[in-house]
Length: 518
Image (cartoon, rainbow, N blue to C red; front, side, top):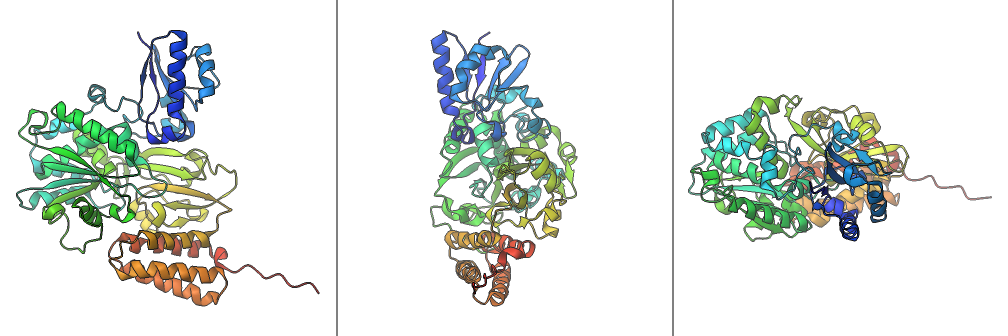
């Protein structure tokens, strides 16, 4: 049997040198006259071990990592094609502690298969959900998704089934499914990992959504900073279309559904669903006032389902295994699994899919291994650049939408960024206001003007100009932005600012002035 070598080709692994490792392995194979098949799979998400090379042996896959080009010759010398020991030897990838502890439902195939092999996808339960959906009534599909408890994984946590039912029940001559792949939050990469590592699961989820709601056309809106994801989704869509998964007859059924990939220009505000719709229509991305809701009047004025990548990629397993199976995972109203993205100053950075309910402390210190610098953890920001900063005192908070909301926090897209005790929280608060000022679409005054005034107020505070007055002013300003902004960009900016001020007040006090020498 020809040896099969798996080398990740996703953006995260490429940034860590995976292409150089692949070329070194190709050269070594040629030099030794050894025949082997190299498969560029996605990453499993343990980025602290990337580039992680795997070889298929008679006893299963064996992983090595992080592999550098300089390691390749010694790998061959030690016999890595048969899984022999080496200083980079990791053993069975499924038993690596970071991966073994996970509950992989959405990411079950990611990093395991060739992303562009439909055969490999089907061998690991792919298309089962879609095949089942083609035999069901649309209302029954919607009911299944509703009963699973699936909520929007893009940040808002809105029940997916309710959104689908609204579109199903709204009469129109045309309806759309829009996938929001404008993943712009700091410390997030789950959407990119799925698109580059298991693109067919997103296509399958969108097709199921189309059948469930009566939509025949889908759009995947990807930010321009994700060129590899754009290429992967275009390639996968073409393969799916040729195989009859997409097109006039989905898997030979009476349902039609096709997908088009669109590339955004990288505006953060276009992650907001109505701004995204404007951008898709060729307009400047600006927030729309609601009502009407996109489910009633969305893309081109037609009923539109807008879901995040992970929301849609979670649907196939629900249809395949049933609502009760998925609903059995989680905590409270947060059902199923969530792909937690661990980043920042952390020892074991990567994607960790688990059922809702782990505490923040478990995620940061047990799974993430604490800070990479070795210094104490000072703050953890959850939910992107507009998420709240949580101190160690809140590490007992369960990873659950309601639990975070009860402590003035957001799960958002489940990105976690860790900071050690050298972080200056006044500077972090200023960054939030500056970020909002730069990224604001400009439509509403609280966001457009409030964020700029926020930068100025925090700058005065940093210069110790009437500090009590500035603190009162920034608090009032955050209140206005939170309740007066049209969308979450201005409405959520107060979260990082006020959490930094609440939990780290010492960073907002002026440094004591040294007394002059006599």
